Length: 198
Image 1 (cartoon, rainbow, N blue to C red):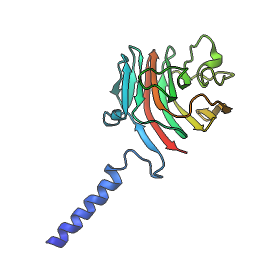
Image 2 (image 1 turned 30 degrees about the vertical axis):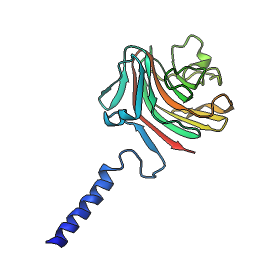
Image 3 (image 1 turned 60 degrees about the vertical axis):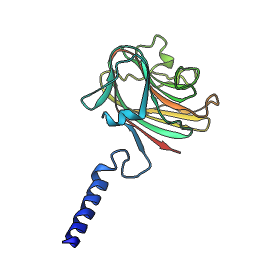
Image 4 (image 1 turned 30 degrees about the horizontal axis):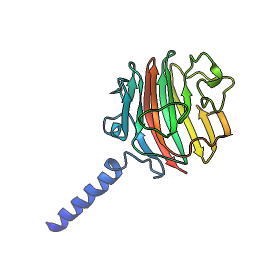
């Protein structure tokens, strides 16, 4: 009887390892999932401002107010993968290396923009505001998109849906800090945010 109990406990452990304990990390073990549209992973973020963030249909969304979800941890050199959806009026972005987690701006962080309707499109979707322009600006509204953002020392690359929009630009303003997901206008959804240290 004891032998069967030990076997059962071992099988349960294997089952939890395979299915229950790896939800935050893909199989390669290098990526950490910060957000995947569940209430549990919302615990990795601290909201600032009054944006009405909520979990809806497997995504974290906002459609009112103004504010950010700010990561609890700070990062230096990393790669981010983020899946997002916006409508045509949306103003959003992924801010990296934010030096002040209580007041996120494009001057104390790098803002990888999501803003198809920006009056000056050179710093619209695909650009790093005030650091790297994009030309022509790609459109993101009305579909799910994937951002791949690499920050390694002073060098940054941004890829949107397989298209390189920022290619190895150098800037030394911010070396370390939080990540922040912005809600400024329209409808904004994030269904996956993963990070890998470099």
